[in-house]
Length: 397
Image (cartoon, rainbow, N blue to C red; front, side, top):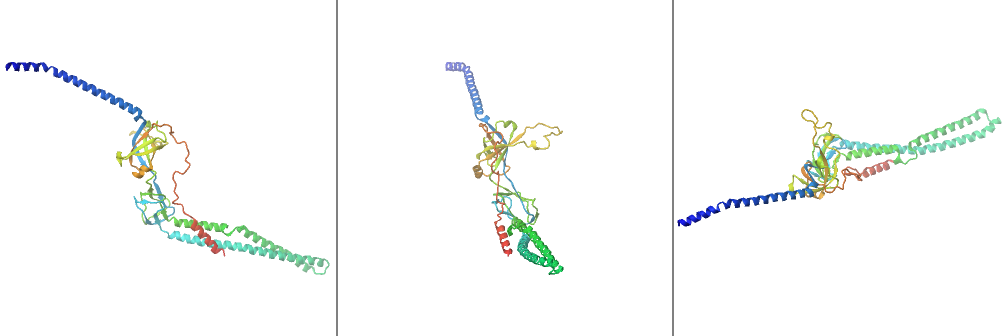
């Protein structure tokens, strides 16, 4: 028994120096393997950066932008009704604010009366022209008779068959007839200078009165202030009962479509940015689950500080150099916006793929159509034109 214990102790003493050596060799292999893995990962990352990541420029200094259509009155007046409030959806042509119509209706009635009066007065001038023509014909007949009488009496006077006084009366009659004919001709010419053989509805006085009637009718129609496009009401400041003028901002209508991103890139990031390059946008409101797609449509012509009066200064007033950021406009896919609506001013993260450098840094083509347009504020003049025609016909006799 004692001999067995002695042998086991000898075996343990022989194995104990071999265990640390074995662990040390295993640890060395693991460290070498980890180092190789880190090197391979670094090489893979470097290759990935060279092939992919270096072509992307990213910024989180990017915000949603869009149109904010300012609504203002085209005529002055008192507010009777405000039909919509902030966050309400409105359609193009909807009445947003109604003004008191009393003054506009009175002006419209006066304009109708003025047109009727002008038509009657002008029509009277045209009738007078016919009277003057008849007067000229009458005076021409009288002159012809006087000249015939004088021609018949002159031989009699030369033969002393009639007295000199009677002959002189004949000569005076001719002179009087000529003078009366001249007066009639001048009256006719003066009247013609007013009408110039122009139709009644084309007479200047009638056209001026008709234009004033149109103005009054337009002013009456514009007492209803309409939305120029579809969108959502924002920044309403108008109140019922307030007196507004044509320069008073009433509210804004913000369309939910045609939004874009103003991405402010550092100047060191812009070397490879070109118009037409693809971009992806992630909005903070939806997170990484929603990705918007778009394209670069333009680079602004200056940074924000470039348009300020003074450059950046420190606390002591000395001018300092700061890293400038230039706004890059990203046009978003409208289908993406329709699925996930955005609001103006929201923060976003923008990535631009600069692989394709075929585009230009500045726009080179001229826009052929209007960037934005709306016919909602255009008023059809057909009703008032028909009214003018009816008034002219009714007062032309």
